[in-house]
Length: 299
Image 1 (cartoon, helix red, strand yellow):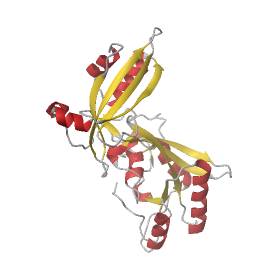
Image 2 (tube, helix red, strand yellow):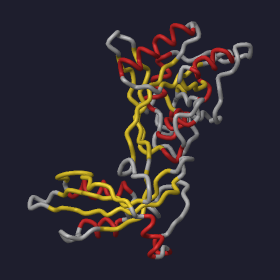
Image 3 (cartoon, rainbow, N blue to C red):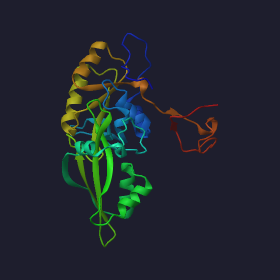
Image 4 (cartoon, rainbow, N blue to C red):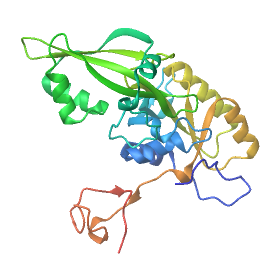
C-alpha cells in the first residue's frame, strides 16, 4: 500500500469507486494490517505504526438522524512499553543495571499515586493481562507469587516529544490474592518529570466515511459534522476516489483525514477451486463457503 497518498486529481483517469457496500465489506473482513493502514496511510495520518496496539472495526453504525456511518475503528494508542518487551517498536535502550545511584535517583524523583489496574480477575485473565503488557512467562509467575508486602520492579519507557519511546521510568507492581482465587493488580510509577499518562495504552476511536463520486463537498462536510456530534468522535477518515487539490485541502483544513480508495485492500470475488494459493485450507475446495477473498489468485 502506498504511504501517505491522496486521491488522484479529477483530471486523471481513475477506476470506478466501489459502492458503499463493498467498502463496508472490505472493512468488515480486513485484518489488523489493513486496518492499521487506514490510520497510518491517510493524510494527515491519525497515528504511527509503533503506537497502534489491538485494532478492530465496527461496521454500519446508525446515527440518531438515520445516517449510516460506514465504520468505526477501535484501537489502542500505546503510550508506555516495558523495557525488553517482545514488541517490535523503536526505543532507546536505557538499561537499569547501568544506572548508578545518582542517575537512578534523578529518574525516580517523583512518584505517582497507587493505581488499581484490574480487580478480582481470575488466574487466567490475570496471566493474560500481565503477558499482554510485555512480561515474559517467568516474570508473570514472579509477579503472581509476590508476598503481600513485596513489589516487582520494572523499567518502562514513555513517549518523548517526537512520539518515540525514550523516556525511562520505574514501575512497582504488586498483586493481591484473595481466598476465592482471584487477583487484583496495582502499580505505582516513579519518574523524573512527566507522569506516565496510563498503564500502557489509551482506547481511541476513529470514524470512517466513504465519499461517493456524486456527493458535493458541502453535503459530505455536513455529514461529517453530524457524525462527530452524534458519536462524539472528533477524528474522521474520508475514503474517496478522485478529489481536486482544492477539495483535498479543504477537507484537511476541517480536520478530516483523506484516504485514497485505491489504497484500500478490497476483497475479490473468489472461487477456491481454481485458486493457486496452496497454503490456504480452502484451496481446491469446490464447496468452499468463501465468496470474496483478499488473497484470491486464480490459476
